[in-house]
Each structure stands twice: as C-alpha cells, then as structure tokens.
Image (tube, rainbow, N blue to C red; front, side):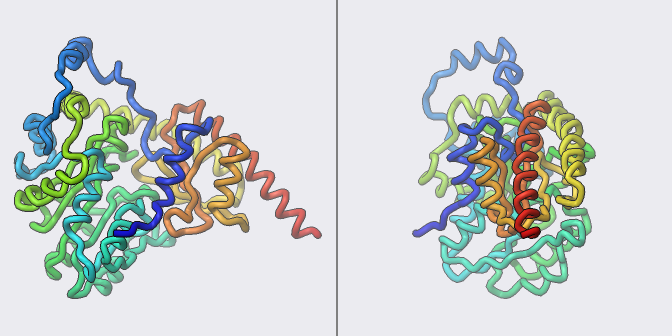
Length: 379
C-alpha cells in the first residue's frame, strides 16, 4: 500500500516542539498531570505494574465511555491510541478498492489520504463559506451512488468550527439509511463548544453509524493518547482484530489516566475549563483580525480552539506560513493543507500571553508582505 504525504501532520510533527510559538495546535493548552490526579491517585499510579493493559481498553474505561452514548454497552466500545488510530482502523476495515467515500471538506485530511491509499474513490462534500460553512444537503443527496460505502463527517468541524444542527444530522442519517451506506462521525471536538451546549452525537440515529472520539481536543489531554470507537458490537469485534496489527492496546498508564479524566465527576470540570479558555481567548483573536482592517474575513468558530480565516494577500498560504515559521519561529497551518489556498488555521487555545506574543510576530510578517506587495504595485 502506497500512502501520500500527510502534509499537515508532517509539518506539525517537524516543528511544533521546535518553534517558540506553536499556534498550529487545535486544542487548548494541556492540563498538567498534577492538576489531573490527586495525591491518592498518584500513589495508585506509582504502584501500578507496567505490564500489558487490556488491549481493547479496560472494562472500567469502556464502561465510562459507553455511558456517554445512549444504549451503548462495553461491546460497543474499542479504546484506541488517540482518535487518529480510531479513524485509521475504521477506514482500513471499511474501505476496499472501488468503494466510494463521501468526505466533508474542509476536514482533517487523515481519512482523505487513507481512503485514497486503500484504492477508494473520495468525493468531496464541501462546506461553503458563503452559507456560514453549512453543509449542502442537496449536494449530498446528488453525490450518493450505489457505490457509496461511507459518508465521513467531522462534527464539530475541523478547521471551521461549524456545527451541524439537528435537522441536518437527521437528513444525513435518513439519506444514509435510504442508500444503505455507513456514517463515520469524527466527534473529537464535542465538548469544546463556545456556547456551552454539547453537540449531539450521531450515535443511535441509524444502525450503520460509527463514532470516533478522544481526549485530545475538548479535554486538553493529547499526551494521554486515548481515543475510542463506538460502533455496533459485530463491527467492534472486527475493528479490534485490525487494532491487533497496530498498537495492540493502550498503555497501562494511559488507560489509568483516561479513567480519571472521563470519570463523571471529573469530566464536566475538564470540559468547563476548555470552554472558559475558548471564551476568553477568542475575543483576543477577533481583535487581532479586526486590527488588520480588510485583510481577513472569518466566520467565528462555534466550537474548537481553531479559527479558519481567509486572508486577502496575493501570496500562497504555504509560502506565507513558511515565511512566518522561518523568520519568526511561529507555527500555524496553511489552507493548502485542507485543499484551500488563501486561508490560515490559527489555534487560539494557548495561554493568553503566549497567544498574543505569537500573533504579534505574525503581524510583523503580514506588514512586511503587505508593504512588499504595495511596492511592487507602485513600480
């Protein structure tokens, strides 16, 4: 199997821990271990033997996860190493050469690259900025064919922060049911809504629904590397067999920490922390964009620690991002990585002073580029 480069992950993996300011991150600044665990829990962790953990997730962890999905049981849950592995095993198990995937775009491009590497045909299901990043349901209806195996949704969406409403979710489910195809709903930003209202899940709307989620985005715990799949029990058994060929299972300590984070008494406090950060920091980013006059247009995100903004400069997005990276040691994500030039994705979930310092340095590059373009026009 040949794979195509995963441009965003390759750039982030190379630079995110090297630059002075990483504003490419799509979650809030992480929770320190000392804030997550009590002294009693820390002592229990220190006494934990570092052997193999239950490969599909401990019963306790799967039970906690299942409680968040109406009607789900232990047999409906597979714990994975991050949401990325969850998406990988589903795509790997689901798609064969000649299958057709309808993929919401813009989107995190993991599923795009994996599906194409498996020989599937990928048809973009585009969100339109002019409609507020709404999904065109008529376009979805027209795209579904007898070859359509899977409709892949990211809700809340990366990178736009848009959220499907109940009517849209029901229409998608009804169209999938009529066609007999599957829905894969990546819900990893669920819980990071700025208005405090948790985005409903696709789970339970239709029998052929698979959910992926994890602790990286709404929980501020990417270092725990814990994700999960929610699916019909027969599919969980199948996905577990694919999981055997990858990470085998979560680490003992990751499973332990995930149980703490998702405990019913702890989870709401973690989600509330995330929302407070987003509500505090988004005005900082909005003010920064407004200070640039007409250079930016942006529909404010409804969820997630990222804003997807169009910029009005005649320069390629990757070229602009690389200039910011190499001259100012600030990392952001170019729109090219979502197949959309002249856009930038900027993460605003960092600590406020860190965010402002990074934005100030981006500002310096934008002024330089604007001045250079003005000089070129004058001559």
